[in-house]
Image 1 (cartoon, rainbow, N blue to C red):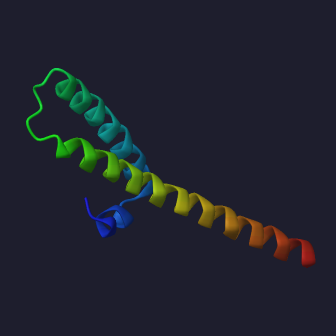
Image 2 (image 1 turned 180 degrees about the horizontal axis):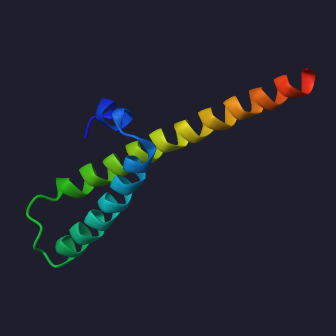
Length: 78
């Protein structure tokens, strides 16, 4: 999944996708341990996709916190 695709998602969609990908990652790990997974690069790709999504989610949370802090400071000055 590309970074611009992740950024276009809404926060709720992003959380849902992260949960789905984590379940998928567990299944891939089991398949790998049972020697049923032929393409082991899928593990790395899934792991990186999850990390990208969590990074975008964290960026959004920090941006929301930053705007909330600015609003409280401006309200205190007035």
